[in-house]
Image (cartoon, rainbow, N blue to C red):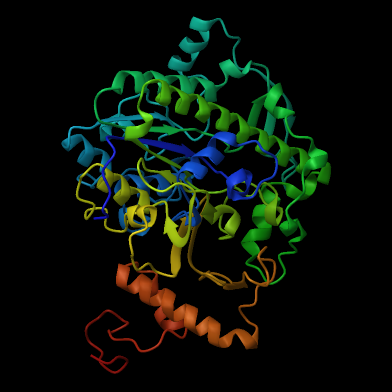
Amino acid sequence: MADVSRPRNILFLMTDQHRVDTLGAYGNQLGTTPNLDELARTGTRFDRWYTPTAICTPARASLLTGQAPFRHKLLANYERNVGYIEDLGDGTFTFSQALRDRGYNCGLIGKWHVGTNRSAGDFGFDGPDLPGWHNPVDHPDYLAYLQERGFPPYEISDRIRGTLPNGGPGNLLAARLHQPVEATFEHYLATRAIEQLEQYAGEPFFLALHFFGPHLPYILPDEYFDLIDPAEVEPPRSIAETFQGKPPVQKNYSAHWAFDTMPIETTRKLIAIYQGYVALIDFEIGRVLAAMERLGLTDETAVFFTCDHGEFTGSHRLHDKGPAMYEDIYRTPGLLRVPGQPAGVVRDEFVSLLDCTATILELAGADPAPAIDSRSLLPLVTGDPVEWADDIVCEFHGHHFPYPQRMLRTKRYKLVVNPDSVNELYDLELDPDELLNVYEHPEQAAVRSQLMRRLYAVLRDRGDNFYHWMTSMYDVGDVTYDPSLSGLDESTYRP
């Protein structure tokens, strides 16, 4: 373990579908995230923080268990289930139970989305059961919150959506909310989190505040719907995407999200509203951090901020997420402030949402070993010398339909293996927007071979059976096992 005096408490702030480039700490110039920027200034900012998979339920299950998705096998959101299991298996290790065993109070306010039949309460978390993928504005606890305070009910207008390939109305992307800020679901969540802090004060706790936003649809009151002038918005350079040389599924997904049926002015407005949504969440996070200060908890509480995955918001002519392993949805913000540790630290190691699990366990004095695919971030926070991998592997299993992918990201390159289609290779030094797939370029043969062998070795060593496909299809080097798995043929490998 790292040499760190453990804080008494842990506050885990999490958003859903959050682009890293919306935070000032990561270069955004709009000045709409002062509270998160202050967290970065007083703690550690991780510049290469990745999600293990860019889809809600599998990513959140990985955080809970410390296991990669292929291992815990909760591989898809239940709303778009493609035939996978919908709940974690009985007896699966979770950090919440380990913390409970050490006398911690555990609370979770907000989005759960880790299975169909088992709630956060089933895993030892206090807090209201708020199921689903979007703000459950019809939930009895939220309706009671509105009624007790005399706030008006949920009502929207100014809907933004495109037109689907079959001529039907596209998915709702944004709308204007006719409620004051204090009535928003985000304000309600922050209020409930503050109430939980007040209850926990004086005893060791882990409290998670999981916002449902800035996941689309971006539904905001006037102050945030109109906060950013669309004229100030610079569309992403990857809006120039042609899908030439890319897996055809990407163009299909663009049609599903009706990108080309909306004018550029609408895209600018959507990006502006999205940034406004981030600003609203930052404001609510500020309320929670202020309450923690008021309660005298700041100096004894470690604070995380991250999200489950990113969001396209027009990048690559896409919205939401899906079977395209671009930086927009795989690289995410990651901040961690540990009391007594250096401030303003910036780390460029490849780390993962998965690594939060072991970090939480170590902070609580619990054994991180059961979080088998997780590694504590504390040595990077404290500055202890530590060896770290100079690449990271991510995975995807499908959304709407099965679609297996694996990705290897190094400092310069990204390799994506798509068994049903063309593979992808991007030189992120020359092409940071991932517009040119150079996988088939002859001059990249050596790079392609090196990356393919490295990805193969990592997957094989982990036990991710995706590697079996790679054995026969690509240059993966010498095979030291019978690839037929029959145990009958010794002619194709070296025992």
